[in-house]
Length: 509
Image 1 (tube, rainbow, N blue to C red):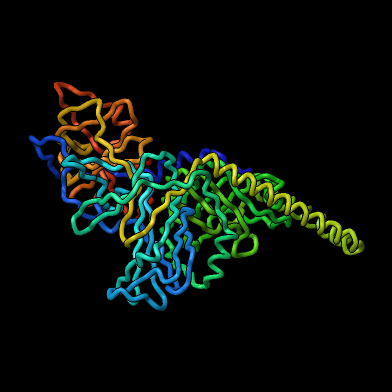
Image 2: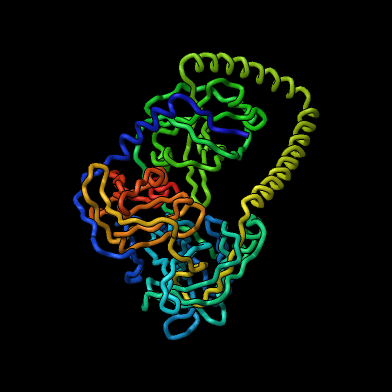
């Protein structure tokens, strides 16, 4: 087991990052007055932040063959043969392009711009979601349609385990959600049945997946992050120590000698991001990751490090390095280990029977390790209480597993909104989240603010110049209502936002 070690460099990183990423904006905007709090606005899909959206996963399938596609969250898209029709109602022949994406938390809901309000009997509610998806299909850039006799099934991974949800489909023409049926849940852990999925995809022979690499910027800094668990692939050969280049990013990681003997035997080992690595982004420093995976890299002596959190993961190449005295000691130790290993190998050459016995023993150990890891992974999934929610796709578009919810209550006041320098702010919509509830409350008229002071709240909006203005849970604790009035002093994030995970990192939801 490995964990990130805290050190003095971490505090310097945080200050450096904050100095670059978070600058108070001086913006001129104004808040509308004499309005009651309302959530009424025209329902249409419109991203509140320009050029920021949830990316699609793209697949190519053979329309004549049954297929199981796997999404990064663990969800499965089960496509029967002849599931697609053209506009005349005839079965589609040949390759079909599938676009698919999911939305699992308030940050996703916000970035997507998909309306999360629902009208029922003249009353407007907000949706509390167990997960939302969008699926589309086309051939030669022309839309194809779902075959009602051959319905696609989506088994979507969800961390919301309650049975209070319904399935809705968004009608883009009317701007309303249409109730479809009571949600169907497959209880129990969502286990990555990789072997069965690969057999299904191999049998169909038609799954091609397209991925886009993330663009990155370089910003030399050292940092560390907490982690609950780290998966590893062991390599028993020692590696020659390298000197650290302080212009590059570094990770301080404590390793277990049983898993990484080639690294753990040294003191002061750090993992340095390869200078030409394109898949690393400085924003990862501001995210708290749940899992870290190390495995053999693309080059000798390098390691692929994967950071993951819920439905987001990033992989980039690193090399173990040392500084100053640690490097000198590591080099001396390596030379001793190298000589010792060479002597041992020479002896093993003279006793080939012993080699065979050792190899057989190693195979048995690896099998035992694989079985133990599988059992631990299953137990880990069970503790996450994940379930699968079943969507029967009768038509392509946006689908949601939701239950209607009312706006928070408990406290209210007449609100004005400014940045930290006192400049008034105006927005089209204000967004409120109670942590612990998978709902985002969209507020179109906000001269009076309603919230539950017993909950951890976060409030945000987008300014007229496409910047995020945030009022977090610490700010909520400082609210002082006087004569039924209070000014909400919001921090405007000056740093341009271009990726959806940057929003989630800033909002910390």
